[in-house]
Image (cartoon, rainbow, N blue to C red; front, side):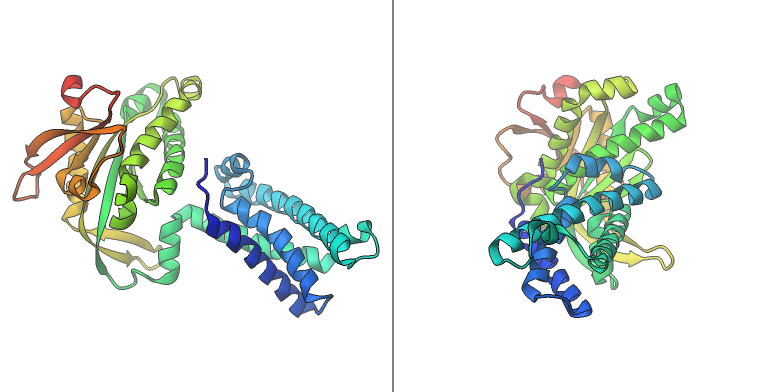
Length: 346
């Protein structure tokens, strides 16, 4: 379920109303009030839809389609929302203000108005598609040029490796394995979004997720993301079994520290992280496999999180030598209180 975002519920009608006023200014038609109301009623559903607050299952389904199919399905959805929004706005204007001679006329839409609404909607669809392709936070940061000059900052990193993917590829082939990993990473997207994180990269069967310290430590959001993902997989276990013959498993390692964040590349821009923190997180993920731990967290991050959520428990696994670090790193396994300890599983 999408979290309640009062800012979105307020911003959407305001943005729609402004688009309606712009239409009135360009085409010099009718009362500004009427254009603002129509803009709010047409624009709000489209923005709610794009933020996953309206028809989320349909939106998630077409987002996975190829770009031509995505574009066609999105435009068809927008047309339906435009027609319905205009009809609702016209009915309201007719009954409250008597702006139209009758209800039928109130629900009609001029050709210029429809094309304007569709054009604005197509631009929104394009922006959101690009945003989906490169990631929402990366898109925003590239647009604002936040990392055009390298900066030093503290971040939390999660390396999440899909367990058993190599064996799955050997049994079913590379094409099936890629479809499998694609579905796994699609399932990861919503828990990451809810936690305020960003999926920054995919490397084979591993996803790299990061948070700012403030976002990731708030209510242990970075840990909650991992266990929300696990819960999502288990809730849809029957579907995974039917489609792929198994329910995905994973190993996760989390660590935090200082990195240099920079925008790199010319023809293909990317935001990259440099520093020992990223390397250490990667090596913790490898250590998780050796220790038989599903979720491994460094003491550095655990100290930043404070009290864990009541359903989670930390098992101290002592200090371990990490390649590339001068001093051993103290680590802990995190589990739900209903699960056996890592030492019992190993």
